Image (tube, rainbow, N blue to C red):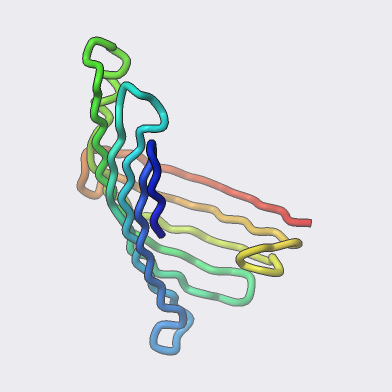
Length: 145
């Protein structure tokens, strides 16, 4: 997928192999690159990275996903006289993280669901290399009717 614009440009390359070697595993690799000037005329955010993931299908509703993601972000400031923008530029760096997700999906379609529930519980640990260290828990729900 490519999105080219005046203020934002992104490139995404994804590969997924379902039922790897006739098993319940789905393997995939995602690569991306983004340039974003839409948030402010004072700075530009450039990032690139990707992830490697494996998903195990337990049954028609439950899946378990494990992944590794890496992302490098560079914030370029055009106006060095603004202290807030200079502080934002210090947020540049490299994130290296591993994660796991438990997924429940009872929707009637993976692309355009009209009924069902989709829930995702995610745990991520960053600091496996990289400049940033954090732990993240997330829980997302989508209900379609």
